[in-house]
Amino acid sequence: MDDELENIKKKKLLELQQQQMLSQEVAEEAHEEEFEEQKKAVLRKILTTEARERLGRIKVARPEIAENIEYQLIMLAQSGKLKNKINDEQLRGLLSKLIPKKRDITIKRRGF
Image: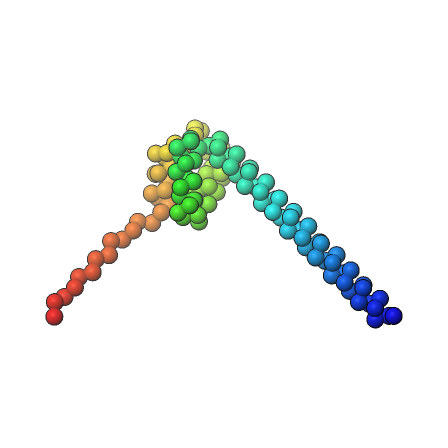
């Protein structure tokens, strides 16, 4: 009888722990979604439509660079250093500074 009761207690404890973990995961996802929405709202305020489209394309190709740019732009906006919206040309200027230049590699073959 005691073994049965102990097993039921263990099962209940395990279920409670799983429910708690699940609720924490849901809360974290909700927090992440809220953060992403806030980030999008700030970017809408500081970027022109063309610049947002370019940033979206960059996010598909190079997500780590796009995220870096987004954070830098948000920091500039929060510090009050941005007076006007950033247009596509200005964004390309920022990108040229952040994205490393590709080196052309040429292979020369020697005749035997």
